[in-house]
Amino acid sequence: MASTLPTCFALSFLSSKGSRGSSPRCETVMSCSSQAYYPQIIPRIQQLGLLTTSVVKKARYVDYCVRYVFVVIFQLRGDYSPVKHMENIVRLKNILVQVNGPWESMLTVDYLQKLGIDYHFKEEIKLMLECLYENMSGNEHEQVITDLFETALSFRLLRQAGHPICSDVLTKFTDKKGRFKSSLRGDVQGLLSLYEASYLNTGEEILDVANEFSSMHLACCIKDLEPNAAKMVKHTLQHPCHMTISRYNTRHYLDHCHTVSGINIGMFEEVARMDFNLLQSLHQKELIQILSWWKSTGLSKHLKFVRKQPLKWYITSMTVLHDPEFSKCRIEMTKVIAFIYIIDDIFDIHGSPDELNLFLDAISKWELSAVDILPTYMKCCYIALYDITNEIAQSVLKEQGWNPINSLKKAWTRLCNAFLLESRWLQSNQLPKSDEYLKNAIVSSGVHAVLMHAFFLLGQGITKENVSLLERNPTLLSCPATILRLRDDLGSAKDEHQDGFDGSYVECYMKEYPECSTQDARDYVKQMIANTWRCFNKECFSQNPFAPNLVTACLNIARMVEVMYSYDENGNIPSLEDYIRVLLYKSI
Image (cartoon, rainbow, N blue to C red; front, side):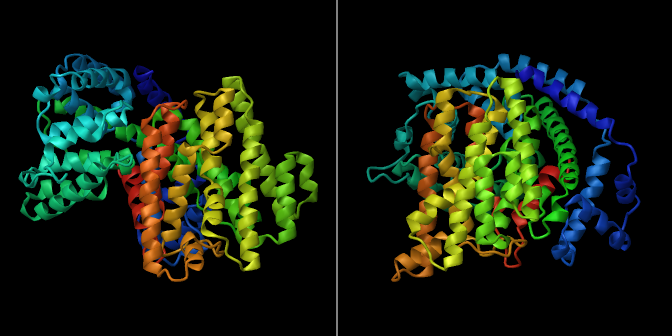
């Protein structure tokens, strides 16, 4: 499979060339080259869905979107060579065969992951890590892997690959009281490796201690480091690999690439840069497809009160499953995410209680004739949702031999039930108990609905048992949903395009415990998020019946939470703007 991925690049890249004619949209965008033309171009970008009237006055965001469209149009004209890329990957496979010994294997796997090209070498990496695990399981591992850097790195690589490695391997670096030895304070590489490993915590105290120790001493040493090393340490502290979308870290790593002993850096780096640009070009093409689809639905005209954020919707899908082979999955997932936002706004800020009950009844029946009972503004939404969901189901049936329509219908019905319950709480002006709120909010987050569709679109591990398990919202799905909901409720500002309010866990908790201050409640929620991550890690690193790609999708949703809900005092999301700039806007 890995060796065919560059062909996926080639097909996607070449197919995009046929759509590069000078359409009215391209002509309008390409004819503008300065801010003097913004009044002319802004309406066109609004039609594409990148801007809405409520944010046109925000000059910085307008400038960003205008420049972004320029880059999308022009960058799709780049002369990348997928054929050369494929040839280079074959050469790298031959190089990897020559890697020998645990030390070189660890460095190579870590390097491939940091460069974001590890998915091309799955079998080679699997073999290297199996040999490393066998070595560490034997009596000779103490002589082979001795220092903090090596031990923490091997622990992280093996645990994230699903090998049952115990964190006790780190105890040789602690004293009798369980504290890490003071002699380690100046070992920057060892501390970085320990810090990264500490986030793979499944409830182990030694990893809590490791995180506190490494983060404290890394922060203290920054002032004494060379500028490039200081920049690397700062980035790692802010974006540990297990908590961050890999492509974001890959981009930073390629901009500040380090020397790796024993590896042909030039060849690896060339492949990584080409890979990043080719995949970025594919993502840009997909975004234009999404913008075209969104405009064709007409929903922005019929439902003027809903959020119109196709760029934001696509970014979520793009980061959850970014490999080239998942192009179709990303596009369909974006449509699912769009309807979650739309239906949420219908229930949260527009629909009357009677109308919302009618909509839920229609979803439960899942028949086209059910549209007759709906008010006009709901009809277009219901028909569009019905058509898209049935198209996805038919596609899965054709490709996988399994019709998922009943599961997908249940997912939408469950989501609408959760939205309706929140609406009733809002209408009655009564807050539920915090546990009751969170149980419902895990569903209303939309995570279960998105991942249910992703499971079928990925087409891996579709069995009666797995489908039944997923319909019950297992830990693998409920943990990222819990993290999302709790982090969203901690946000200092609501979505800038959402006028409704549906309560928060903090508010419910403080009503239930009046003696608790706002800060105490927020600290409690932060601890809940940390505990959920530990539970989530345990699920991801243990044997489960689901395919690795679905596990990765679940992890990436949780990783994107901090990006999507880090509002500033102006209601903007700087971290999201940075992701868009780094992953879609700026090539290497």
